[in-house]
Image (cartoon, rainbow, N blue to C red; front, side, top):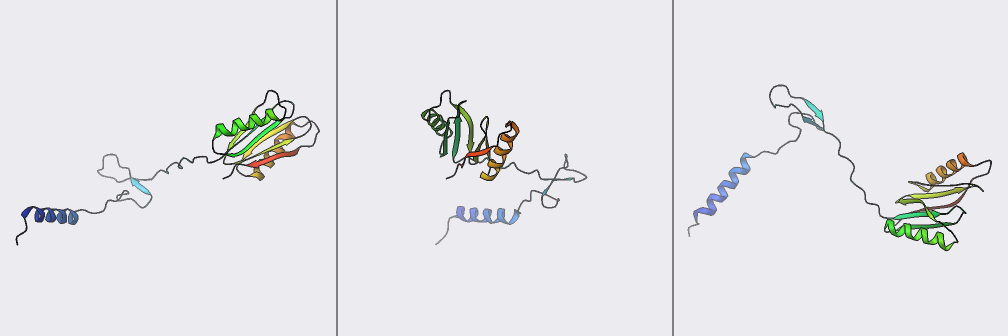
Length: 160
């Protein structure tokens, strides 16, 4: 039985291409982590560090919000899937607690929030951890307090 000529030629061509190709190296004649930066490609070979890539965009998985009014009424939401859902729920809860003129004090994603207050002022701050949020809110409140003692009134984290 005789094989047709076309498959034999195709196989021979593929083997030739595989034998002649070599793996390509991005750095060229430079050490690992560097690239060849000579503008013309002739003469002196300059090496420069490969620039770092920006960190990947991280999608926020859970949202939380805090809303309040000037009379000390608060509304909170934690661990909601959507930012809009968290903000609407916080505003609704503020109104349900008797608040008039409720407005958002803080919206946070995949982090923690704390409210520190004395009798005259309140600070609402978000940070990566609960401990950081509590410490930041107490420090901020103390800066505004007029002789009153600030205390944590609320803290929460937005988690799965």
